[in-house]
View 1 (tube, rainbow, N blue to C red):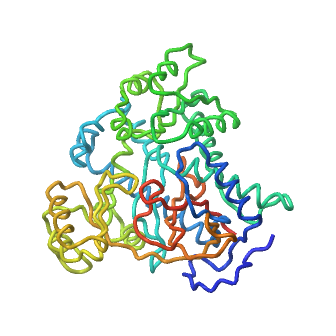
View 2 (view 1 turned 135 degrees about the horizontal axis):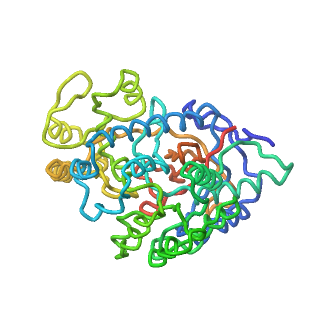
Length: 450
C-alpha cells in the first residue's frame, strides 16, 4: 500500500515524520463510513473529517506511551503521598463535598486500582511532547470514539490486500484484556457491569457497543443504569458481577440529578467499579503542579523527566515559588505574564474552567487570577505553542480531499498500564487553542504508526 503520496509543501516538525497515508476511497464514501460508525454515541456533527489515519513514525508513537506511563507513575505517587488517608487527601485537594463518596472500604484495593484507566492530553511543542493534562477515570473520552475511527480505517485500508500498511492497538480489545487480567488477579469470575446512564450526553449505542465487544471477548458483560445496579450483586453468586466499568463521573451524575446511592450499595456489596474514586486526586491538575514544583522523594532523573515533558506548572496561591533559578511572587508573576500562561481549575473537565492568557484581556485575566489565588484550587501553566503536522481531510463544502496543517492534541489511552491506542483531536481549519469536541467543535481521528 502506497504511503507518502502527497507532495507536502508544509514544513513540519521532524517529530511527526514525513510520510502520510493517502485516502483510499472517494470523499463521500469516507464521510459516510466515518459518520455511520460513530452514530448514536453523542458525537456532534464535524464539518471537517480526517481522510486517513494520522500516521506517526514508530519512535514518536512509542514515545507517547513511554512518557505517559512514566508520568502516570509519578502522578500516582504524588497524589497518594499528599496525605496518608482519603480524608486527608480530600482536605489537601479541597475536593467538593459531593465528591466525598464512592470509595471502597478496602483502602489498599481503592488505591491499587485508581489509575487503571487513564488518558493524558499531549501537545507537541518546540522540544517534543508536552503533557498539558492527565485524565484518570474510566469515563474519559476516546476509547469508543477512536475504536470507531480505527474500524473505518481497518475496512478501508485492509480491503485491498488483506493486510494493513500501519500498526496500532485496539482500545476495546485492550479494555477486555484488562478485565481478564483483573479477574484473574482478584480471583473472581470475568463478569463486568458497564455502569452509566442514558441520561448522560451520549447516544444509546455508546454503552452497548462496548458491552457487546466485551461479551465477544470471553467476558460476560451487561450495561446497568444506576437504578438497576442492585441486580449486579443481589443475585445468586454465579450471576453476580464482581467487576465493573465506571462509565460516569460523580460530577456528571451530580449535574444530572442522578442518585448515587445504588452505586455505593453495589460497591459495598462487592462490585468493584474501576477506576476507583481515588482517581479524583490523580486526575486533578493540582497534582501536575506538585510534580512540576518537585517533591522531596523525587530523584534527579525523575525531576529531569518532569522538566522535559511537563510545562512549568504551579498551584496558584499567595506564595513564592521558583521560575528557573530565581524566586518569584507567584500571583504577581502570573498577573505580569498573562500572554505566556494558562489558568486552569484543578478539577475542570472537557476544557471547562480554562482561561488562556493570550486570548484574554488584562483586566479579565487579573480578576480570574485573583479569584483563583484565593480559592487555591487552580494552576497556572506555561502555554505551549503547538507544532503542526499535515493531515489529509475531507470537508462538507469541498469536493476532493486536501492536505492541511493541524495542531493535534494526542490522547494515548492506557488500560491497566498498557497501551490501548491513541485518540487525537484537532481543528481542521488550522486554528489553535482550547481543543474540545463538544465545547469548541473540533475534529477527531485515530493515530497509527508506520
